[in-house]
Image (tube, rainbow, N blue to C red; front, side, top):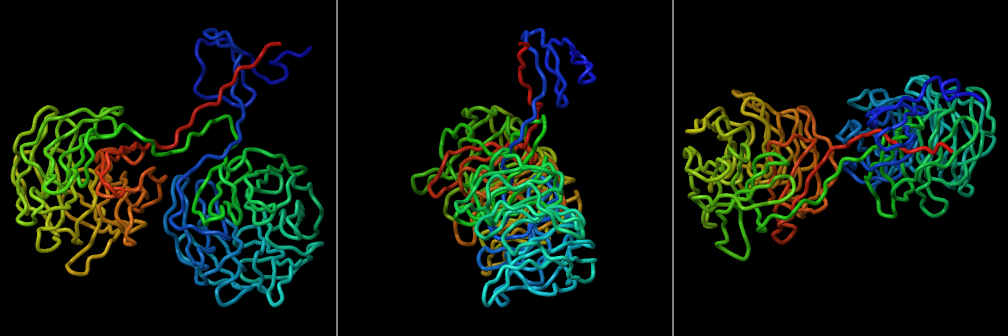
Length: 615
């Protein structure tokens, strides 16, 4: 009888505690628990940040950490492209031709899309190439098809099947692309559409599809077609990714919408972890292997922007998400916030019922519960806060619900009691602020006459005017430090042409510059961040108008989606010093005044350890 070491190449060690990492097949004896243990393979989907726009029948390209969603139908058909960074989505270049049921392939910075249907052309022949920034026209297909399938890269792609219009007819046509033009090659042995393609131009799989929902799997070697192992469950409108020997397909209709996921090893398909939500018309990152993929969009039956990541490894993934924290002691809106997720401060705000329900109360959060803080010297609302729980400043706002003139007074908190701080030079409400008690910044706001571009710095004693901001407005959020800060605009002026905007301005301690534009324009948002390159913004009041549960993160260059809040709201406050990996939001309107608190925790990973018997 062979020993474990002879078979695996490793011996079983005795340890008093489990290691933090491990590989498949490794084992150890935990002397503290008296068990034989080892990392176990887990194959599962976990939720991620949604796309900025809901879409179905879209194309996909890229990888799990650098994906691309291309076109699709909202409805109507759209040219929207979004880029995925492994955590959230941000805007990419817009297609020249809006389309749905198009194919996509290649990496995020060198992708290809072709075919589909447009509002004016039921069977589109246009091809477009992406360079990571913009789409340009490539060589047209020899014939237009929608619900087309494809594989490969931008300079060596394959297009197969699809359907033409008038009358709708499935095709068996196959063409190859060399980065410039398409050439027809050996046709598939059967005609179909609404399947999915995987792999490369010379080693591809065309899987699933119509007539009716099929379990077919055709393999292409660059010259000839052969029949591969069939899917366990036939379906159409499915998504997929990977290569011929490591493929993954998911979702689709059979005819009911499906959560099923199957993995391919080059010979046969094996059912693995299901999607959390059944959906058809879904897409995936085509280059990702079957051990690591991403799925996005589709219909459930409503059109969705939901995103899920698939991982098959000994690592257990816990998706980033907002979760409910303890409610504030008093429901309030347009309040101020400071501190971090585990040491936050809620200040002032508007408390129902009715006017003049303006608060002078503060509350402290320890990451678990809220307790009463010191009472402020002045009641106010629609101000802003900065600093930490034990060294905070409450700035500006409205003290009477009666309009201008607004109070110039600021107040400082030491973790126990409030004292008067230096007066601001330009009183306003709806300002953005960031930094610390001894190195703070406040910018813009509404002074009762109009929005302003004025900005000031605080040294712990007095406020000094500094360079004006590039935009004027109010109802925004701020984050970062005095020398590395930013604010994201809310309602941009001047009067009377106010409009919700996502414009971002960055501050280096002297000058303001324009930063990346947020994905959605809204006002009365909340947010923060430890530095200019580590920010977040959540909630707000949309143009619609409606309360928002949307959240975004900022890396110093661009905004990307975060998981959505559990409760839509506006006029909330947040822990401004928390980075975008940890965040806290509390209070606001949804649509009534709320005490709700939510905490954000980014994705975490841990080794998946299981016990093994010795019998």
